[in-house]
Length: 605
Image (cartoon, rainbow, N blue to C red):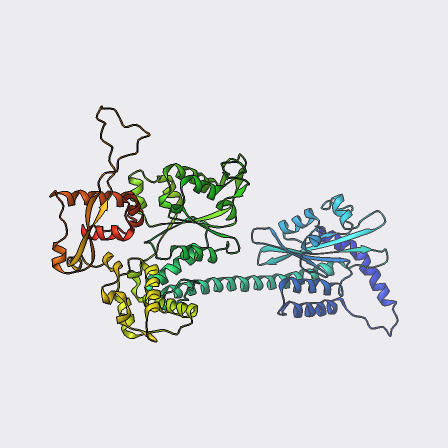
C-alpha cells in the first residue's frame, strides 16, 4: 500500500516532468528512464563480477548508484545466517568503518524491510511512523529539510540476507520518480544477492577444502615412518637411536604445556640436559632456568635455598636473599634428586607446587611466583610412597608428566656418536688429534657402562690421556688389562669368582654396654667404638692361593648378617651406592665390591 500511495502521489510530478520535457528545446536529446536504468544495471554488473573483496565491490556499487539516482547517502547491509549484522558498507568504505555506516540505518525501518521482504518508501522521514525522532535526526531531517528514504530487501530465493537503502534531501525543485527508483534499486539488490551468495559458497568451499587438506596432511604424517618425520635436535643431547628420538619427540610435545614433569632414570643418563631442553623448547625459554640438587644440602639449608630468607632470619643471615623459586619466576626450576628430601620438607614443598606462593625463611610476606617445576630422581618413588617415606600427594603433584630417560645400555647405537663427541672435545681442550680405531669402538659398544653417559665420558678421557699413539686402539682401554674396576658393577658373578678378596672393616653402631654399677653411661663419657666386623670384598685379580689365604669369618652365618646390613643400608639410601657407603663408613668402591661379593642385585629405577 505504501508503494501504491507513493506512486499516486508522484503521478502529478510525472505529468509536470512531461510538460517540461515537451517544452524543452528541440535540439536537446531526451534520454528515457529505461535507457538510464539499463546503463546502470550494465555498469553495476561489471563491478559485481570483478575479482575483488566483497566489501570493496559493494562499496563501489553504492558509489556508482549516485551517478544514476538523486541520492545523498547509500548503505548496503548484509546479515549472517542467524540474522546478526555481518557487513555494512557505504561510499568510501575501509576497514573499521562498519559501525559508522551502521549508525545511519534506522533500526525500525530496516527491521520492517527484513521482516516483510517488501520495499519501504518514506517521502518525509520526520512524519513517517517507521522512523523515530532519533532516526530522523540521524538522517538530517528537520522542519526546513525534508529527507526521503527508500529501502529494498536483498534476497536469495525467498530469504532476505540484507538491505539496500538510500536517502535524499528534497530541495523543492527536483522531480523524483519513486516508482522507477524502487524498480531500479530492486534489480540492483537482486544482483547483489546473487553475488553475495556466490561469495559465500566459494568461501565455504575454500574453508572445507582447507580443513580437508589439513586432515589429510595429518593422516599422511601419521602414516610416515618415524625415520621420515622431521627430526628434533636439542643442544647437548647426542644420539640418533629410536629410544632417544622417541624421547626428543615426547619432550617437544611436553614443552608446550606448563604441567610439572618428573624425569625418571639412572644416574648419569643426562636428566639435567633433558630438563634444560624442556625449558628451551617451551614458551618460557626467555625466562631463567634454575637448578638445585636436593640431596646435596641439609634440610635447613635447603629451605633457605629454595624459599630465600630475610635479614636476621638465622645466624649468618646478614641480608635478605632470594630463593630459587623467586629466581625462577616466569621460568623453569629443576629439582634434582627430589626423592631425597625429608618428609617434613615435602609438606612445605607441596604447598608451593599447589599454590605457587610461599614465604621466605623468617618473613611473613607471601610471595607469588609463576614457575614450572621439572623434578628428577633415580629412586623408585612408588615403593617410597608405599613405605610412607614419600608423601603420596607430593608424588601425584610432581608426577603429572613422567618421562623415563633410557640408560646407555638401552641405546648402544648412540655410543659411537657420544664417544666421538667426547674425544673431539678432549682434542680441543688438549691440542691433540686423536682418532678412534675400528677395534676401539667395538670395545666401547660391548661395555655395560653402569654409570651411563657420565662413565663413558670418563672412560674416553682416561683412555685418551694415556694413549701413546695418534689413534686409540682396543689395547689402550683399561678393561683389556683388568684395570677397569667399574667393570665389577656389571659383569656376571661368575666372572668375579677368581678375584682376590680383602677384609674391609664395616663399622657396626651398637649401644654401649651398661657400666659395672648398672647405671647408664654418662653423657660426657666418650662413646665406645665397637670393633670392626670384617667384610670380605673382592679386589684386583690374584692367584687362587692368595684368595685361599684370606681370613674367614669366625661365625658360619656372619656372611648372612653382612648381607642383611648391606641390603638395609641400600634400601635406606634408595639404592644409591654413594649414600649407602656414607651410612656404613665405606667408600663407594668398597661397597660396590661388597655388593658383588654377596651377589646383591642393584635395583634400577
